[in-house]
Length: 409
Ligand SMILES: Cc1cc2nc3c(=O)[nH]c(=O)nc-3n(C[C@H](O)[C@H](O)[C@H](O)COP(=O)(O)OP(=O)(O)OC[C@H]3O[C@@H](n4cnc5c(N)ncnc54)[C@H](O)[C@@H]3O)c2cc1C
Image (cartoon, rainbow, N blue to C red; front, side, top):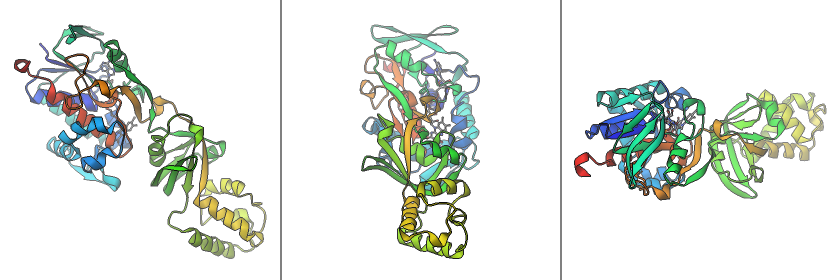
């Protein structure tokens, strides 16, 4: 008989299965997709940002909800252990900007294939089945029902993910399965999600800015500031900086605003000198034609409209006051927000199984003996940079190493 049924063959499911199988447990992974790790294979734009190369205490600062719960599992299987683990599976790794760790091959498939191969070599069975119900008796797991029939087992690990990118199989089944056994589900909501913004952003659709500073404010309070990349889209803004900023938004999005420093390398004084120089070189040209060297083409019409300066005025007629306003606009380009994109488009689902009802060291349910959770199904989420996959590795490892062997029960 199978000891352990793992529902979901994603990052958390495969880590759980391999860890448990290495201890001698008989493990079956149920995965309705034909292929294991469908989401894992598209992570990091197909390159898979496996983890973040930092110490656990530093790591926890990037976890939005709930760092205290994650602490024990993270210390037991920190980023350094994840690195070692993948290198041992034959996936050499490299570290990039911000501690982001990727496979040297830049291939997420290599990560997923290595995990799946190691699982199979360790005796893990995979079955193309959907878990539909968990059977219990006297508060203890006795088996599961699937779309193909009944399966007895001693333990079930729910690794069914959140509800983002449902095309990868993460459709939220696990929430209903956990709820049916009395678990509270913190309402799922988008995290790491693109943001809808005022219409003139759409005019810059496709514009990618590589070296800007993005700040997020609620009223006067600065919530997030970082330098990096962002992107304008038909609905508003996206890209790494925007996704990270989105994790600080809750409630009414319209209470928040973004500000872009389009020239972080220049102080306001230096930027003014630069504008004076550019204007000097374009002395007889219209204002509209004077910004080509300073700003990307797609940005110029929007900056001109927002500056309030007549585009057809000659640059030598632009007043000092107008020039300083333009300078301030470039240093603090405001973006009014109108909404978050839906959770289906989020990189990560925030919310999920309430972690106060789960043992932090073992990932076992406090309500049902033999029921475990790992990965994104839990109310745990973090910013971009490899943190979310590390949550899957650490919680999967915690569950896999904690399910008792038969003789221990
Ligand atoms: C586009 C994109 C890029 C990302 N890039 C990164 C990155 O580079 N680095 C990073 O750290 N994080 C990244 N993430 C986040 C990361 O992919 C997830 O946090 C992580 O995959 C969660 O793993 P999981 O195993 O918990 O869930 P999932 O990977 O979602 O796996 C859940 C699995 O459960 C299966 N399942 C669902 N219902 C059932 C059922 N009833 N029975 C059986 N099986 C079921 C599903 O088919 C699915 O395969 C990215 C996410 C997206 C969408």
